[in-house]
Amino acid sequence: MLITAKTKYLVVQAARVAGWMLAFLIIVLSVVPARLRPETGLPSHVEHFGIFVLVGIMFAYGYGRRLLWVALALVGYAGLVEFLQLFAPGRHARLSDLVVDAVSACIGVVLASLFGARAFEDSALSERRR
Image (cartoon, rainbow, N blue to C red):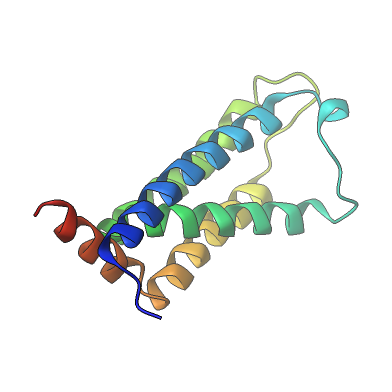
């Protein structure tokens, strides 16, 4: 099945929206009181790993021509999430969470790059410019 440039463009735009929505959701869930946060029953590091890999994948597909910058920005974002928890009652920042979040986001970026995120955005945007 051939994927058209218009479809690729729509996927890139959807990945950008999904990435920003996930980033916003992570901030909200990180600063609300722990009793208001949904629980999956999984260890917190597994939850962190899953959501940050997904964020890394979405941003890599959304901004595939800038993968290094995406990875660096997501490492900074992981630090911001932990920093904001210093000011949230009942929440606490942990270095171990920061490491898991940052590494997981970078894993997501690498996975997306292995599956062609850069080429995907390049072809989608080149069609858009025509």
